[in-house]
Amino acid sequence: MSKQPDRLFAQPLEQVPDFVFNEDVVQVFPDMIKRSVPGYPTIVENLGVLAARFAQPGSALYDLGASLGAVTQALRRHVRADGCRVIAVDNSAAMVERCRQYLTAQDSMFQELLPVQVLEADILALPFEPASVVAMNFTLQFVAPEQRLDLLARIRQALLPGGALILSEKLRFTDAQEQELLNELHLDFKRANGYSELEIAQKRSAIENVMKPDTLETHEARLRAAGFSKVVPWFQCLNFASLIALP
Ligand SMILES: C[S@@+](CC[C@H](N)C(=O)[O-])C[C@H]1O[C@@H](n2cnc3c(N)ncnc32)[C@H](O)[C@@H]1O
Ligand SMILES: O=C(O)C(=O)C[C@]1(C(=O)O)C=C[C@@H](O)C=C1
Image (cartoon, rainbow, N blue to C red; front, side, top):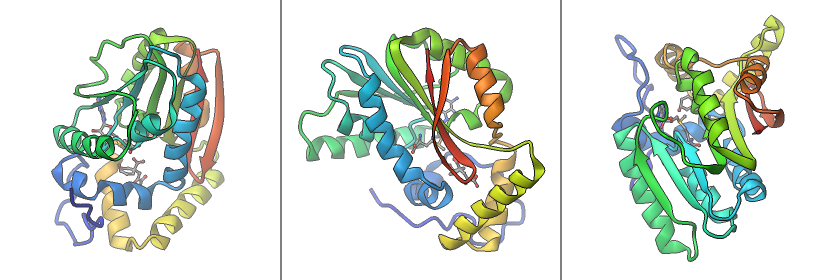
């Protein structure tokens, strides 16, 4: 399982294709997400800690858009409730294949980890089992905006009383000055992590058609419309945030 530095956008491309979670991205993904998302390691580790408070014995814990299973691994490290199991879901075959390898490696290193099932499936078409924790770490932003409410409503229906959805997303801002400042600071974060201006510009063109961030206000209103009673932001670093939504 080679982990390579992300140089995907380092050379000038004649035409920058839309971003897809393919084998090339899988190879560099741990490096890419850490250097692109401010606060990512803190969010992932604390997601496990938060989940431990909401996990209920005998229930399912979902990691939706699991990629290589970083959140799944944190859930397995922190949740101790009896009889829980983690269901990690991603619709990228390349991600799922590598995710399974990472989880097998985790199994060989630790004992008494929660059982895990990795599904190659579209979360928009997945029937959810009753769940105490649903984590969506930077996944909803890749779902078509018109399909987000329906997905969240189905998650809300699957959540057990006392459970939680933990939703992390890149944010945009209605206030132009706030948007500009946090966007510039995010670019500075990428520069500080060694990305060149070319890499930053080409990555931006690659994701602009496929990743559509919402404002915090849009998230809150939509979560309420989906039936959640309370939305608690627990983390923000620059334009990236994570929310706890309670049924
Ligand atoms: C930014 S990555 C998520 C990162 C990951 N949760 C983590 O914390 O490391 C988004 C993932 O969502 C997956 N994805 C996007 N749309 C999906 C869908 N409709 N069904 C399942 N997975 C989806 C992508 O394949 C990709 O692996
Ligand atoms: O906003 C950006 O520029 C990003 O690179 C963000 C982001 C994300 O939020 O998921 C986009 C795609 C990659 O999966 C890694 C990071």
